[in-house]
Length: 375
Image (cartoon, rainbow, N blue to C red; front, side):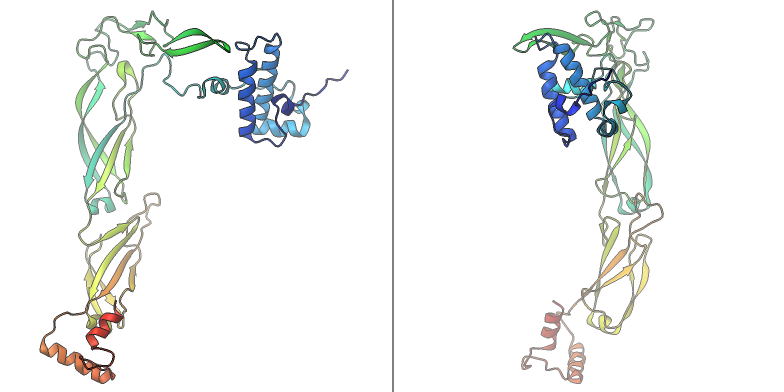
């Protein structure tokens, strides 16, 4: 006796080449149509189970490949085997009816988590490059020292919420054009925790937390940049009545350097040179994040050229030991005022080079020509 193999693609009404998104859309549509709580068809239970079994296979890449190659026989039995037989992931069914994922809201029957906090920390340019450690202080809702966070008076304990029987949620049934629909909301009495405090702690009034000033030492890694954040897990506000603490985000503001400019791990410095220094070469001292350093400027250095000092930039945050470069941007400055002797020497240079200068020069004075050449 042989068993006829089902076509799971036909059950969902999709092609064998259907994408994951198309399979999911088809499942949602059929689930809304054939769910036993919605459909009055006597075969709704069997049809809904068949739809779920098909979706279990085709929504799983591994099982879909096996089915495409060997059919249902390759799955080792019914298509629904390997999970909850006959039931697709509850989140997908929830999604089909309510347009959202199950579990996306607050966890039922558990204390709510505390809020995240932000602390703005200003540091110097040098501290951002080298890294530093700072002590910060901020107000925070922390666990009540009197009741230990339970919210109950000494000797008392929270009790199961009588309104939701500890589930943290209240279910109501309403009639719609599709049939009866179950609406699930957070219990208003216990706020989803499943427990209530009948004899509250006087220090925190049943909240399980009180405000205090908290002091922490924060390690700022070398290479951090303006606008970056350091996350300290569990250092934010604690939740009410024993709920877990949120995170503290330390937002770093870096003060600008007087002469250096930063872009990521690269640093830039504008070096002003005279005509003579650029033409003849020189040695100059420039600022770096490691202190002043002397560099050589080669004769004939052109305006707009760059001298690169490798490894003198900012550290890489995720590559320990690696650093960017310092780029020295050359700016050759044309004098606007000269002494008579300086002018005489410059005119001698022009005469030696065979260049006309002064107002009578065919191509303009040497100063004008230098200004044109140097932008």
